[in-house]
Length: 145
Image (cartoon, rainbow, N blue to C red; front, side, top):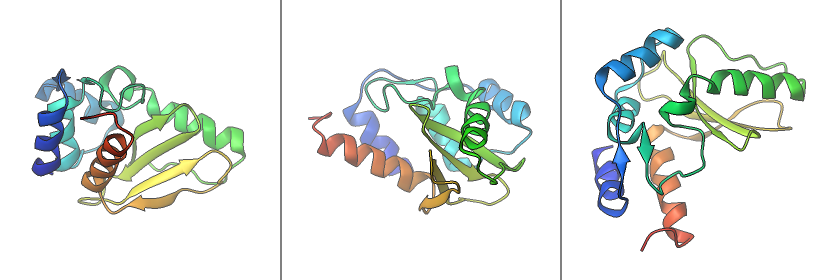
């Protein structure tokens, strides 16, 4: 996890992380224990990540709303899938995709739900692979030099 964080830090300016009190507030709000690798992400860039992930709902200003967004999308789709207490929604893209992991597992797989799919699927083996893939896609799109 530290390797991809260092690569991002080297290529992206204006990263701003969360302090331990802010991370604890998230855990208390959702009544979960967040995994170590996700806490590293939060502590390094959980408040703002400059151009990295710009426009995505995954930072502190939206974290407390993401589960509600996801639940609304599932209901609008008529999906019979329900988020469990241990499912932590950490990412939403323009209201039609969300991603979550299972906080009851160490280094959980990353599940994606896309509007119309009816059920989430495993897209990444862990949070680090999600972050690495996101960075590489931005780099391939020419968002970084």
